Length: 177
Image (cartoon, rainbow, N blue to C red):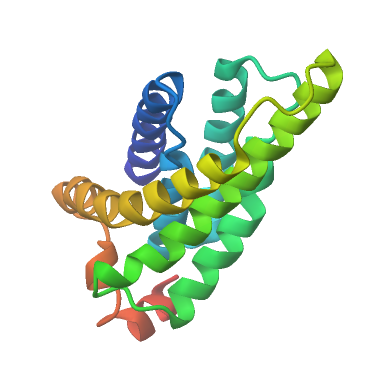
């Protein structure tokens, strides 16, 4: 029970931070990187509901008519499951690879929203896709190692599994899950 409370609280913090960055005009996929983190450390079935709720809250907070952030959940869960089984969790530098992928997925969802919004209002596409792609790629690559450090500290304080310690105990944890 404490695990689910902790995951929900940390998702809430990620949503708040992403809203602060988003209202300043920056695309920083903190909720998606937190979803990736919890998928790798605690399996996808424990992360899917808090992740989906966080993405829905994010869409509602932005006032979007169509919730596009929820579409990021399945690909992030797939990438997280793959990274749990085959990825390198020891190196923080290696975490830029899934971070960049997650950033590009977040860019695609925001581009889809902007395209649909532009078609509905008749204003056309009023955004710079290259800028958003570079922001998603760069900020996703920077956010993932930072999220690993922050969330490892928070999860370690409560005695839960840490992302960077997962590689040594991966076979034993598969049996525990």
